[in-house]
Image (cartoon, rainbow, N blue to C red; front, side, top):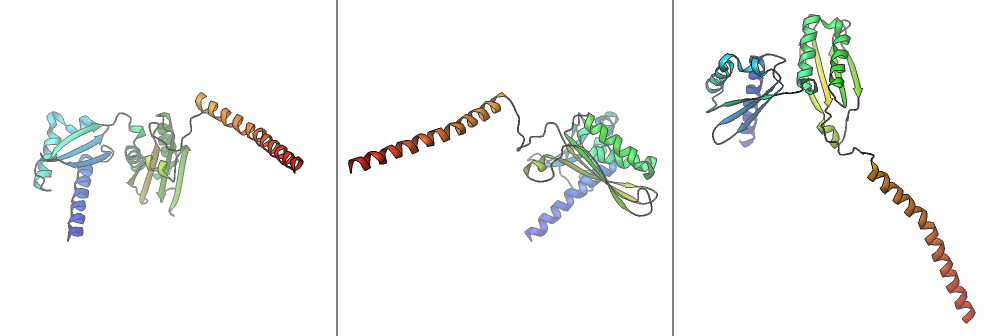
Length: 235
């Protein structure tokens, strides 16, 4: 019974997120985070267009709060807006932007759209970016396409800091899937090595210690030989 209640709870959360995304429109919402407090439910909407989300005098926020109370049975939903300062480093925003461009200009210009989006990601300061498109793009047969530039982690703990997102474009030939991965310049890489003066100093010290080891071993060997010779003479 406990598993069923958890699944039901997660389904309700997913339904709330999907409703907020659809009601506000594609390309306007990056993430929807739900937190539960003693006062009520705290819903944080990350967007690069806070004015369009809030509306005149907060009309859209009021309407959204009313729907969340009535349809989704939330007791006291408090909606907060988290503004994205650098949208070109946000994977969800870029995925939605590519999907909207494919729907607007058609799938025949998918290479131009993908290369422009990738260039804007790199110019924003990202360490690396990758765009994957799959669907009926250049012909009637579905084919995956990959566009990448820079440094991007695929495995290990460092891969967890890569921002990944998906989007879907509904074009005339068919559905096109969009996947975007971005490695932010502010991401902390556990396997990153910074070569500075301190590191070079340590490397030099290690080399000197290794060079001194054979000399010390030779001295020890010579001293052992002398001790043996002295013992033989005494005998």
